[in-house]
Image (cartoon, rainbow, N blue to C red; front, side):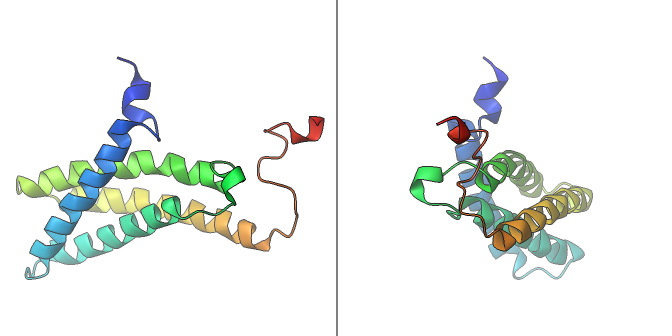
Length: 143
C-alpha cells in the first residue's frame, strides 16, 4: 500500500477523514457549548479556523473548465493536513486526554495555512489578467 492511498487529496481516505473530522467536531462543539473551561475557548477558535480553511478549500474559485488549478490546487492540498489534524484532535477529545497542547499546535498550523491562503486570495482579487490559471503549467502557451 503506497502513501498515495493515505495522502491523495481527492482520495477516499482524505475525504472520509474530512467528513469524520467535521462530524466529530460538531459533536464536540455541542458538548463544549455547556462547558466553562479554557479548552472551550481554544476549541471554538480551533473549530472556526478549521471551518474557515475547509470553507475556502471547497469554494469554487474558477470556472468549471479551470477547476483544480491555480490557487485551488493549493487549497486542495491543505485539506490533507487539516483533515488529519481534525481527526487526531477529536480522537484525543473523545478519550478525554489533556488536549490543550494539541489545540494550540493545531491552531498554529491552521493560522499558518490561513496566512498563506490570505496572501493567495489577496493576489487573486488583485489580478486583472484574463489568462486562465496555470497557463504555462498547462502548456496553453504552446497551442
